Length: 190
Image (cartoon, rainbow, N blue to C red; front, side, top):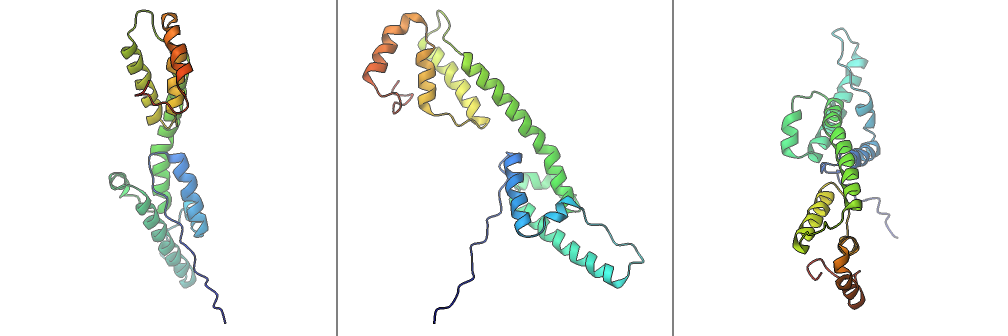
């Protein structure tokens, strides 16, 4: 007789990596799967002094659930960030604090990335600029884009460099394109 195995892998608690929108989506899904999301949407209310016994039991249960949610949030958040939210009484207060601090920075990063993409798009070698200087300028811009979340392949950077060099390098660019596979070439090889 075969025994049925009802065990399953517990989902990992999403770690906050600085990208608030992505983390918040994963964390919301995690908390919903644990049936704790209502504590983020609706903060628990403290019991009135003259609460009846049933209300006290309900409030005690809610406080325990809130402590569990706070525990999940503390596990998801880096120690340096936790130190800034330790004074928050409830899971909702922690969540709101994280949203206030980091959602805005995510929007700023997104706007900065758009500006960097625009700058990369119009980037070209200046007349009289040395090749090494142009490489450095292009790679600096590409690295800034990567730090803002852009997934940029080396082949894109290589193509940008080759297509945006001054006309006096046309023969070199043609030679490189004819003799190499640009999709596998590295920047160092270029």
